[in-house]
Length: 378
Image (spheres, rainbow, N blue to C red):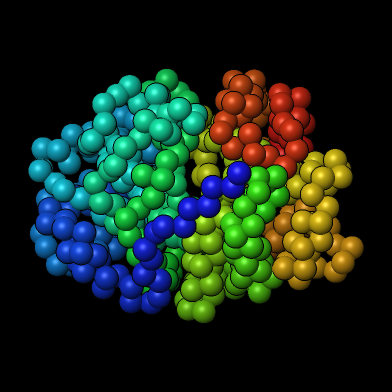
């Protein structure tokens, strides 16, 4: 039976940042705790957000790592509680927004944190969090409207936590905050959003509204060339608006499930010494996963519709089109180009097979399939 949940209040347009203060007031947050990262602090976006709060923040945690960790989340949650905060403003890309959710969980629940992640049972243990206002400054993860977050636990596992209680109370999507985002980061985060849309579409889980939203996201990002335009010209306001909408839609779509691209990306993303960007990993792996799905003869009707929304000819190859787009926008051509070697697969295989995303892949994926996908992507 499909379970279809679309509950987030979202303020979406240029100038939406002005809605932060009213949103805090409407949710009775008097002492907001701001979670962000060092780059946004240095770029001045933190100052802009604090000014928009309308109240003095109870505290600010600006040390979010590029891949959020249990250690960092515990530190931030301790600061949240010590400050007597009553709500969270998560400002940044997926890392900061995921960190904001993790802080909310740790401030109101008891560890160990493994028990809340990865399984349906863990999801049921996650209760109500403090109000979370999520403000994306990139267009990729969609964490501002998603039901989950990802955290590298102390046991080394990059775990996915999923619950309707993890949906932010309010999302503030202001494309103004993405103007001037570097081309490389625009490309990587944009392909993260495209992967969300495409994997959600191909997932066999039955959720027609989510699937339809995914198609629209692909149409905006790829079919209308908005991602390519945003990479070419960071000040293109129309492109920035549509790419942020694609990101938003990607997260609404993936309530339907993801797939093996995310399974392998999560497994490789946990390797500390590589410090790999999640969106870049997804972009590199995606065309090879698509080729495996096509070769299996699965989801053919969906590939017909994908060709349409991507603007391809009826006999166009979706995997080739994604690979060509990657090349145009500067995505590395392979995993080896970003430092991954054969030695990294063995320790990652079990993580990929057991990742939550693997269960909703378009075709059944086990260790053998992941070995093939890794080899193709390398």
